Length: 117
Image (cartoon, rainbow, N blue to C red; front, side):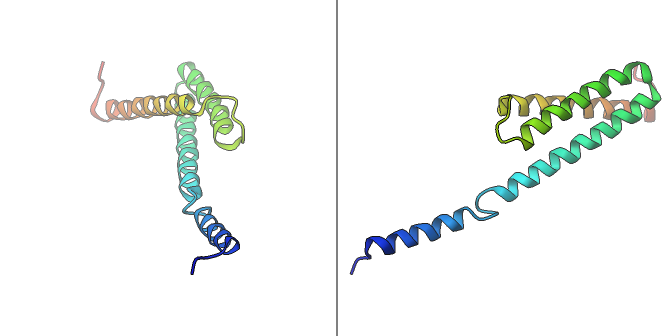
């Protein structure tokens, strides 16, 4: 015998509830990615602060750009309605982070193995 309308509705609700769960709804993945991005940002800010302390002339621009990036990240990650287009901000943030970390890595290698100029 087939199920009645009310019974089918209960089954659909149960399935929806399972899909909306913490892991299956993508919330766990979202918060892991958010946590990683925030930690990477604070690491970059820390590196920029050290660089600014060692080289105040050039470091202040890098530190200012990183602080601005923090405002953008906070808007994108934690606001319900972001002012900015998330996809382009994610691309720009990734490129900026890659550039900063690459710069620090090259700087580290240059100091370790001698001048590269």
